[in-house]
Length: 316
Image (tube, rainbow, N blue to C red):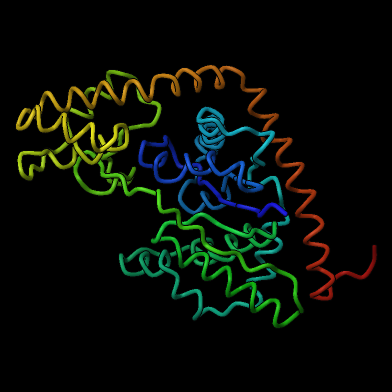
């Protein structure tokens, strides 16, 4: 039987090439190996995004982005979290078996407190909703980066505790840490991240690509602009690059111009495909609605089993 892969994506603005090479591409490439289910985590996004119009647009944009990079809705279940109310119902049930001290160890909550921010209940309970998102669908594997392993550990702990109290109900998912996942440097040398404002957008226009690449910080080592080289490795083989960087040693402007050419060549077809998909909003909405209907049918079946186990189900 084909294993189930599940992952969520928060609707938090424009994706960048770091998102693509770090995660998005893998979701598309793994569709033939797994029964893949990708959801748009709009309720998770509410912890930081509280603007209705921006939320609506971001949700739509995430769906368009994934369709543009080649996600096939016939092979991958794409849906939005809020279309399946069973997620929040299961999260509440998990809340009732989880202690406050346990959740106080979660990284996001600890970071908020350490930085003097008041944490909302949503941020505090974030791991329980994430556990519900995953366990609802009997996921076998969840792609995670090294910095996200704690979330899956909490999910596994929650499944084990529920199973211990109420009987065997949930499968324990395994992390899928892909060797090919790259930490992509931003134009300032730090990890590429929207929070650092150091990204190259995945669907950038040519003029934007030119401006951003020319602003890459040239941290040189042995005559090689390290940040330029590390980004360039995403688009060309190391053998090709080593030859190119040897030929143009010390000519940083020329090397940036070569990178611009390669990024433009990579992004142009994606950008055009995205524009075409974005022009047909009804198609995108239908993909999400159909995906939501399929996901909810699965969730309804699982939540009935959970209701039976916890003792709240009295009639058919």
